[in-house]
Image: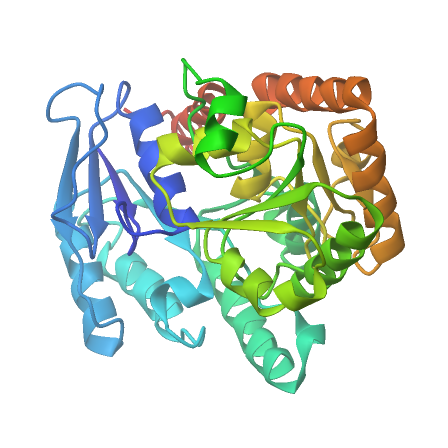
Amino acid sequence: MLAVVSPTWPPERCGVADFAWWLAKSLGDHRVIRVFTREAGSPVPESVPADSITMESMPRDWDFCGSRKLARDLTRGGYHSILVHYSPFLYARRGIDPWMALFLGSILSAARPRSRPRPRLIVMFHEIFEPLHLGPRSFLRGSFQLVIALAIGFLASDLVVASQERRTFLSRLLFWKRSRIHFIPVGSNIPVVAELEDRNSWRRKQGIEEDASVVAVFGLAHPSKNLQTMVDVLARLSRLKKSISLVAIGSVGAVIRNGIDRMSGLKFVDLGFLDAESVSRALAAADVVCLPYVDGVSTRRTTFMACLAHGIPVVTTFGYNTEEALRTSGACEGVDPEDVDGMVEALTRILEDPQQARDLGQRGARLYAERFSWEKIGAEFQQLLTEAPGGTAP
């Protein structure tokens, strides 16, 4: 039996929640899974065998007592493998989490070799540490998070990261565990709607002119999003090209609204948070999606993956976290994180060349189907779970 620890779970709006849900759905056909979450009353994924996934409550207070209680619950369950979804801010509001190492150590110390076998502890890093260059507070907090991440890596049996760059980074620090650090990307958390309505019909409902160019921005207003660059790019684009409509999906719209006075003649549609089907329809109605990231696009970005899955052209940033395979894939247009002129030029070029836009979107959809679909991700996790050190998992 597999235990999964994920403090967040749908319907909570969180990329980790969506990933945990989709992964459980992908593995539910092959394994009995018990999910420990603060959202234990939430529904399990549909279309999985009955009773293959059950929900259990984990302590809402993540502290000394809460971490020890969860460790005892997991130890008593006799699980062969325990998968922990981890991000510093997932467990601690300010991203300072000294209890995860205690939690993992408690599980290992409780499972004495002579009384019961130690469970296989697999930790998936959705985020390792806050970028250090964002300011003094980020530097201090990120440095502490990095120390905790190394402690987690020392205690865990296996580590999973969602980008090749992060695997390389951890392999240098935890060199003796290099073979137990695995790269498995994230998938889209927005299923493509099978019967998409006519995009012009959707645009009319939003008051967008039929001949307007539609640029979409998508996701949470997270510090890793290059939000100021996004506002600068859209402001300049609105002055260079007429009949631009901007569609914002998620909390990122609030940031755009603060800079809307700089965007002359631009129609702004702030959709806010939507259900997955509505997000799918909104993406399908866009001509291009603008996704700048401080550290560059990577295979851990669910918003980026959703755009690829929908075949929507993407203009993004290539930074220190961008894998070489993405840079050379031709699946998106990328510029340096601070290159406002380059991003404006790329957006303009795609909006003025429908054939180039179609080719870009098709390459993205093809790459997603070949490498990042949930069928591929589920198969990679299933292989990881059955390749336990010293034998095969039951």
